[in-house]
Image (cartoon, rainbow, N blue to C red):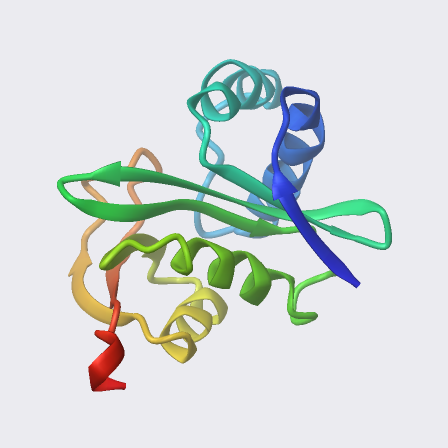
Length: 156
């Protein structure tokens, strides 16, 4: 069973470990910060900013999502599932939670070299807006900009 809740400050280390585990598996996108810097960023920046939710499966943190508002759109900034738990509905539960928040538009960037993530977002109604060469992300890896638009209730 998957349960969702707002992330708390004392979840910072567990979320950082999920992030680091996932990013280590992304051989195409080098980690640009030390593990300690990542942990400090989670504890000192990401969680205090709010809009972070996590999923628990069988009582353990299985993944998380972080969002922000920018230029009138909701941005999905982070969505990571603990390595080994992908494909079990956790990402879908987190994404559905975000999209139910009521924003008319949700955008995100994903690395072009991550076909699994691209298929996931496309399967959930996101459309590709543009491809980037990586100059706008710290990893300098080619990325893709996706967007989801809420369908008005009468047009479904």
